[in-house]
Structure formats: C-alpha cells, structure tokens
Length: 134
Length: 387
Image (tube, rainbow over all chains, first blue to last red; front, side, top):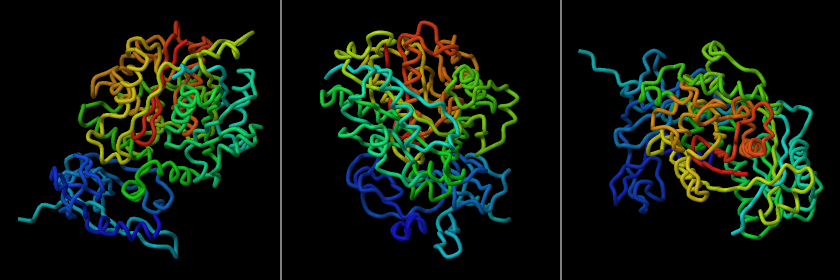
C-alpha cells in the first residue's frame, strides 16, 4: 500500500470507522459510496465497537512478500457484532486456542514494515476476549 | 448475433519454462492454433493475462505478443480479470465474432509465473484480492481459500480427508495428458501427508505455480467450413458464453460458502444453450483448490449446498462417473498458469469433443462445460461447447 493509501484508510485501520446506511440501517465496513445491501447512497460515518467473533481462520505457512518476518501467523474472518465481516490477523493467541465462534476484540498492532527505511504500517488485529478474573 | 465456432487450438505443455519468455510461449500456442485453422489472416488478438505487469514489468502485452507473432495491423488488447482472465478474453472474442464486428479472432491465455521468487508470485496473486482490506492484512490467495474450507468443514461437518478424491482424480487424469505439469497419479497417503500451506489446505489441495499458454481461433459458424476442409478434425461450436460477478472481498459475501457468481453465470449459460446439467458430458471446473471443486459442483446444480464433496467420495467425478471433472488433470495436475487457465480449459474441452483426448478421452463426449473463476469467487465465466 502506498503512503497516500495508508493515509486515506487510517480511520478504518486505527478505529474501524465505517458507515450506517440511512435507508436500510445496516452497518457497513469499510465505508462505500453505495450501500451493498440496498444500493442506496451510503450514509453517515459510524465507528464499530471492535467486538466480534471468529467466523473462520487459517494458520498461514506460505506468506506474501512483506510478511515473511511474522510467519507463520493466523488470519481470520471476524464477524463484527454490528454485522460486517473483516479479514484480519489474530494476535495474543496460541494455536490451540483458536476456534470458530470464539469472541474477539480489536487491538491496534504493527501489520508490516517496509524494509529498514520504509513506513511501518499499523492497523487492526483481533485478540481473544478474556473473561474477567473472579 | 451469429453463432461462433472454434476452428483451431494450440497449447504449450504446462511447466516451469525458464528458457522461454512470455512472448515465446504465447506465440507457440497462437502459431499452433492458426496452423490448425489454416490461416494467418486474423482481425484481432485478445490476450487473457493477469500478472505480466506485476511479475514481469511488461504491460501492453497483447500488442507485444501480436508483434512477436507477426500479427500486424490487427486489433490487440489484453483482458484482465484475475484467474478468470483466460475465459474473459474468450468471451470478448466470442462477442466480437458474434456481433459481426470481426470475422476471425485469436484468443490466447498466457501466464509466466516462474520468473519471480515464490513470495513475489504469492504477493502478485494476492492482487486479485482487495488490496486495502484483504491483502494488507497478509492473507494470501491460498489463505482466502483456506478460510472458506475451514468454515465449510465446520458448518457441514466434513471430515479432513473428504477432499482427497478431488486431488486423486485430477492427478489420475493428468497422468493421461502429455500437456499436464504433473503426469503422475497420487495415493491417499500422499494426500494425507502433504505439508500444510495454510490450514486446512495442504500442498495436494492446491494447484501449482507454473507457466503456460493456450489459444483458440474463433470464426462465425456459418463460415467455419472454409477452415475445416481436408484433415481438419472439425469445428466445435460455442453454445453458451456467460459471466457474472460477486464482491471482490470474501468477507463481503452474503454467504462465503456459496459461489453466487458461478450459480448466475451457469444459469445464464444453461438458458443460452438450452442445455441442462444432465446433458453435460464433462465439466472442466476451476479446481485451483479442492474446496473450489466442491463449491463449483454445488453452485452449478450437481450437488446440494454442503454436499459437493460427496461426489468425490462416491467417485461420481471420475471419467466413468456421473459428471467427470478435471478430465485432463484440471488446475491441480495440468497446472494453473492463472491467466492462461481459462483457455487451457477451452482447448481441453475442444479436444474431448473432437475425440482427440487420447487416454483421457471421455466416452461419447458431446457437450462440455468449462468454468473459470477469478479471485475467491468474484468473477466467474461459464462456457458450454458442443460438436
């Protein structure tokens, strides 16, 4: 991703900022010009809570350029409690713990580094929601 | 609208062609197809390709290939729709001839994936996904398919070895195809012990990175007789050509376990041709990953949702089965040079319909369907061909 594209998407990567459709009231992430549910013009900005659950996951051993230092890592489809699904890495986990339906919450983490002198990209990852201690 | 027929085909054996550049492999397929059609006079060349820009720093590809192939003063354009580029290019060629805009069109699918490192190619393939909201999080193309497969196994209670039959069938069939990358059958043990790429997808669930080119010459059916005299094996008609799309990002799908674009494009193709799934002799589906075979069979009317894998377990997909698939190896064994794959499917469908598929020949093949998928199910092109 270019610096311009990283700047444009900062509110999405740092705070899961999406939209709510004024016509059908569905939550939308990321923001779109047209609501994917009812095809009306999409509406006001809405920040997601960051809570959701694991819809599916995979532990990746072969990874693209730019992510070699982190491999292997786990990528998930996370169903946000507002409705939209996002693709993101899971963090603060051990392999055995991951299962479909597991409650997770958004945290901000380093996604990748572009070499020694390039940008360092931060964005959302998800970690398990820990039960409060008794 | 005119009916359109294929009067020439050409293909390069799929493999790692470090000694040949993209222009050489494309020309190989085009020259073979034109020689079969017995003509050097064409109106247009449409090239299906996905990665020449990102992996080879070569765009303006169709004109480069036309130039190298001696096709001057013709129309040349590259068509890109990720792994569905090949069939998308055929569809453009079909529309050009059907409309009467052109009389003779060559369509070539070509891809060169082995000039770069594995990670570079993996990153290139990931450009078929949503760059800002999928690839930015480090998910590869295998990873996206793994997310589908994991959920599919969970939702439909599918055992881990359920997909083995797709891979075993593809390799058994590929062993009978001289143009396949892997001409060797595999055992269940090989499948079960294959290393993981992205859980639950292992090496034997996944198609290989490779180079390839395949081409076809399209003419109006009413003029096909001019090209099929003498020893020519005969024209094969395009009975249907249809394409449909879905969201680019997997996470935006209404149902990530259903290939809606496969359903829509195959229904359009069935309506255009008047053919039903029961009439189809064999189905060249897009088995880039074994999970895609199951989902394609479900979306095109051969299995109910969540039950596509039963067809592999019941051996209904073998050459003698109810619906033979990947009859000359499919993407898994013939290979998946991404932008070329859709045209390999078409060339193999023509081989089957002419009765020229050698040891891989399907008995009494009269109608064949080919389906080419771009992305994780975002662009799906269906063609139905008949003798």
